[in-house]
Length: 129
Image (cartoon, rainbow, N blue to C red; front, side, top):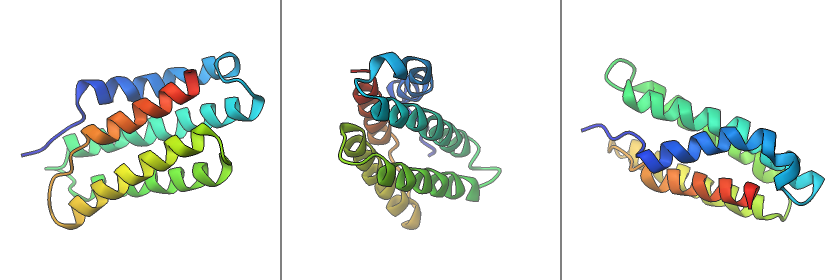
């Protein structure tokens, strides 16, 4: 049985996308604002593609793996550029959830995307909080 992102996870993705225009005023420092904006664009797009890939897994089973690989690559880049900020910690949490999803895929299981949505939501809170 396929499992797509839950409503809270989908809302977290939408919030990540919406945080971009708010990041300049919501984040306390210029670098944090840049981190938040970059995070919102890249991760929001990647999570949207991942959700779409899982929804269409019957037609293209490899798409979910590609989408997850894109997400992990972008999170790696963001983690290196975020420094020691709260954004970096939130990115690390999201990386851990992506790794768990990859482990499930490797074991030919359907990953639970709920915790990934929760980690994305936490990242949104860090950027807007």
